Amino acid sequence: MKDNITAFILAGGKSQRMGTDKGLLPLGGKPFVSHIYEAVKPIVGENIVIVSSNEDYDFLGYTRIEDIVQDKGPVGGIYTALQHSKTKLNFILSVDAPLVSTELLLWILENQDGSYQMTQVQLQDKAYPLIGIYDRSLVSVFDENTKKDRLRLRQVIKEIKNQTLLIPEKWSAQVQNINTPEEYQKIQL
Image (cartoon, rainbow, N blue to C red):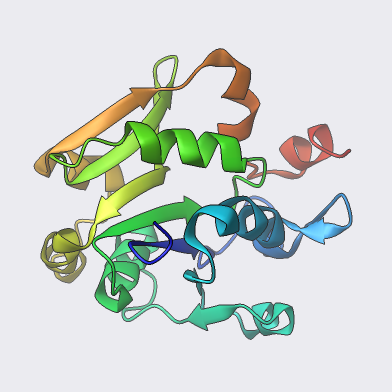
C-alpha cells in the first residue's frame, strides 16, 4: 500500500490566532508536525511531504514544498499537494490536528470508497476536510478554484463527489484543531 498513497501535511497557515507557527509547537517533547508525521508513516512509508513556505521545518529532515500560489489557504495547499503527487490517493492532513493516530488514519483508508473523489471524517455535526483522502484527479478542480479565488474549502468539496465517514466517539479528541493558546494549553501532556 505504501507506494499507492502519499501524505501531505498542510502547514502553510498564518497561525494568527496562535501567534506562532502551530506545526512547530512542542507537544510531549516533539513539534505538532512530527506527531502527524509519525502517525501517518506506518501507512505511507516515506511518502510524506510538508506543504509550507516556512524554512524552519527543514531542521526536521522532512521533504518540504512551498505553495505554488501563496496565500490561498487550504484550497491552495491542496492544489499544491495534488500537483506534486505521484499517487492516486493522498492523505491531506492539517498541521493543527496533532492528536491523529495511525489507528484513525488506517481506519479512514480502510473505509474509503474508491468511487468517491474525496473522503473526510465527521464528528457529530462537524466535518473535517483536512483529515481526509483526496484523489489526485482533483488537481484541476483545486487549480480552477485557486485561480478564481474561491477559497472556501467546504464550498469546493460540495462540487466534488465526496464521502463522509462518521468517526467513532473513541477517536473524538483526535480530530480537534488546535488554533488558540487556550486550546493548546488543554492538550498539554
